[in-house]
Image (cartoon, rainbow, N blue to C red; front, side, top):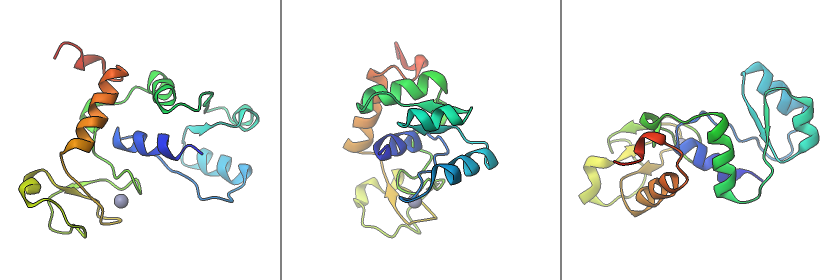
Length: 144
Ligand SMILES: [Zn+2]
């Protein structure tokens, strides 16, 4: 249910695990505890059972991002450091890229060694940055 938020958090560089469907609340809490993770959930009852949790109240992505980043400040230098799809840490270069990319963008290509997905600077990343700026996720961006 929070898949879109998870993708945004990864793009911002948060180590974000998104559980498979069918995982039980108990398993989820066990993993969170073991890996010292913050549990994000839209389930108020579940959040009540786990101390390090954030209850996501809104179903609007902008408000969800705002809520999480207010509690856990993102680091600007980690932006675009993780794979939005699988949480892998991106590596610069297109050598192991398993996808087609615009050759003119070769210099800005990053790839995920875990799933082979490629990312590069373009309209999509610009849109994400614009969104995060409009949400004032990064204080220091103001006035740049
Ligand atoms: Zn990946």
